[in-house]
Length: 110
Image 1 (tube, rainbow, N blue to C red):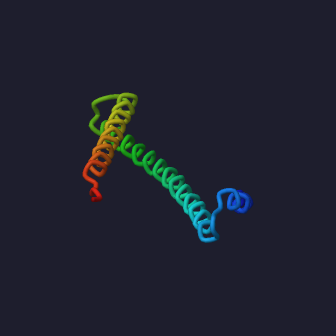
Image 2 (image 1 turned 90 degrees about the vertical axis):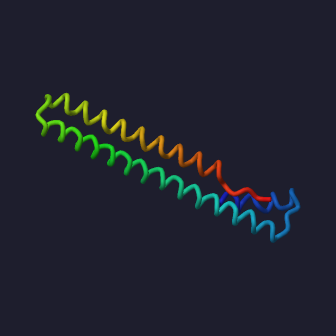
C-alpha cells in the first residue's frame, strides 16, 4: 500500500489518470492484498487440518491393525501409513474431479 501511495501521483501524471481512476487503483491494490492474505491463510489452515487428519487416519488404522493381533508394531505402522496415503490420494482425486466439473459446467455468458 505504501509503494502504491508513493508511486501513484507520478503514475497518474504519466498515464493521465483521473482522480476517480486513481481511487480505482488504490481499491484494486487493497483488494489484491486482502485476497492474497485470504489465500495464504487458507493454505496454512488447510495444510494443518490435512496433516492432522491424515495423522489421525494413520494412527487409527495402525491401532486397528494392532488390535487384530495380525502383525508387529512395524507392520501396523506401515499399514497405517498405507491407509493414510490411500485416503489422501482419494481426497486429491475427488478434489480434482470437483474442480473439473466446476470448470466444465460453469454458466456461459451470452
